[in-house]
Length: 143
Image 1 (tube, helix red, strand yellow):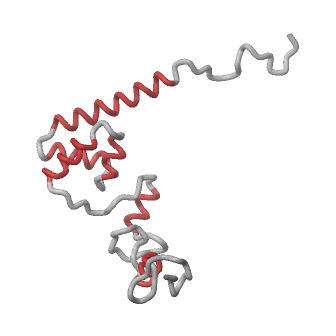
Image 2 (cartoon, one colour):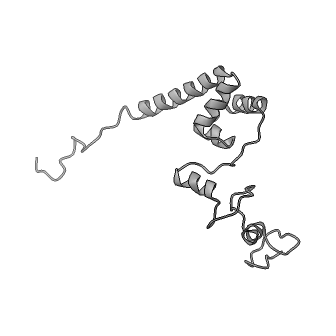
Image 3 (tube, helix red, strand yellow):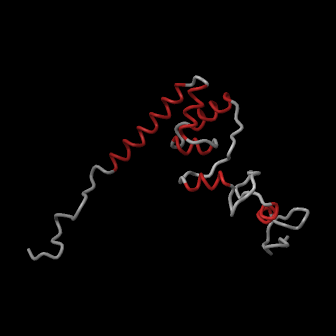
């Protein structure tokens, strides 16, 4: 069906509007699942996340401590600690605080080791790079 407001082919609700237009008409934030009123396109809190350069994430994660630990164990080794935290709706520091609060120091150490491993891979990938002009080329000089 077509949306009555934007005329796009999209699934529509009972009022005849797509989900994007329905959120705009209701005055809600454009982030899926956010029920905050919008100011511009996003609510204040999602706008602050964007201005800090963070990945937009849900404002209030609703995981119990046991579920959080299980999710971190499951995601460990598949992604960076920053992306794992963003998937769970938290910042990296917030994730570390939560894990420390529930006594899962082993997961904090594993996340820190993953960060160190990623940094080491980055250093190794840059080992052979020559910075500056290539000494094998004359760069316009007559030899």
